[in-house]
Amino acid sequence: MKSISVHILRDCSAVGGGASRGRAFSYRFTRKSNQTRLSFPNLITTSYGFKSCSATLSVVAEVEEKPKFDVHKTALLVKELRKSFNSGRTRGYEWRVSQLKSIEKMIDEKEKEITEALHKDLSKPELEAFISEISQAKSSCKLALKELSYWMIPKKVKTSLTTYPSSAEIVSEPLGVVLVISTWNFPFLLSLDPVIGAISAGNAVVLKPSEIAPATSLLLSSLVEEYLDNSAIRVVQGAVDETTALLEQKWDKILYTGSARVGRIVMAAAAKHLTPVTLELGGKCPAVVDSNINLQVAVRRIIAGKWACNNGQACIDVDYIITTKEFAPKLIDSLIYELEQFFGKDPMESNDISRIVSSSHFARLVKLLDEDKVSDKIVLGGQRDENQLKIAPTILLDVPEDSLIMQEEIFGPLMPIVTVENLEDSFEVIKSKPKPLAAYLFSNDEQLKKDFVQNISSGGMLINDTILHVATDGLPFGGVGESGMGSYHGKFSFDAFSHKKAVLYRSFDGDASVRYPPYTPKRLRLLKALISGNIISIILALIGWSKD
Image: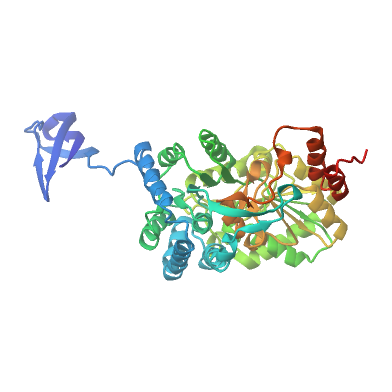
């Protein structure tokens, strides 16, 4: 049974000089089956005729709510998945391949729906959605299918004379039941890519997509239910309450993508159960720009790694540029020209640039832009439309170092340019901040390239381009310091969700008495000789002689 109580407060003017003000009426609507019955037990009648009447309705609905996904239900979910994992269902090569093929099929068959969901959440252009999300997820799947049998083969390692005769290997075994908490800026790719790694490694997995990208979250839940083995792979939708309930459980691994603030919460929750974590966070990713470059190509690649990459809403986007005071005007002119070529004279009308994800993120960016010591540093852009959640590509020159825009990750279409006297001074600017997830250098100076690689610590690094390093299967993707810990992508995803088990095989032959009591001086000499691996020392110890 469902019931709705409606309270109406009427403020009415009566005909003939009378007034009835502030009369409260309470109505109860009761619904049984498909019929609705209205009862008015508290209706007060009046003989007044009303000339005008305004009503304010307050509706309190007593409905059958969907059961809340609480800690108890989370525990039951984990128990079900652990039962499935312990049965050995997910460990076999055949199961892993079947699930990966299902994901590949899902992407092929539902590409249109995926693109539409990404557009609903972020106004992401179709081409950008395909390149940065759909094709990348499909590529990860294809690589895992191609290489999985090799990844699963135990890796032989050498043994020492101390264990002779013996053989040894490293066996990759699944961790168990794992949790993937993804983010909103690339809500499809950053949900599926780690899940592909977890499945490849033979785990049962729960995916918690971001509630800030609700269309993609809902679609992922539906697609996983339709295409994958729900006895071992599940999606949990929701926000803070659901995530908190998930973090209360004992997992065998957690991979989280998002902010450093929430990363600390995830890590603290994991520590209660000694659960290992991979944290993909972010930071302020710099791009150092030299003057001895192909300026047009460099600028186009910077734009591709900022505004044409989810409008600056990516953890590996260029956060700020460092160049020399002398070269800055030329660089700015080129940026202005190429931005117009990309997005037109009015980028607010362009269909080739994503919107800001939400009103709260919009307000945060406006706050960065409108700070007193920042707003007068704008050299391009600054336009915003709150209704459309759009902010134009914005360039700022030499904003104060203590401003908010230089202290926190921007995650939007704002690009500060910091100038230095000599390009080598850029190293100190970068080192003064927490280690970034990515660092970029544009230069033809070979020595500067070497110095940059050797002296700048970052999760990843790219010379003379932006963001493409994450599309290289042979490279790990991950942070360092406050930009994260652990890595994944390709084989590294398989490794992230595997335990590398050390296995040593021995026969019953070659049993050396030297390892057993009683411990005599002769046995000590022989043991030292065996451990040293020196053949002459071993022979001398065996015949009772000493090199001394």
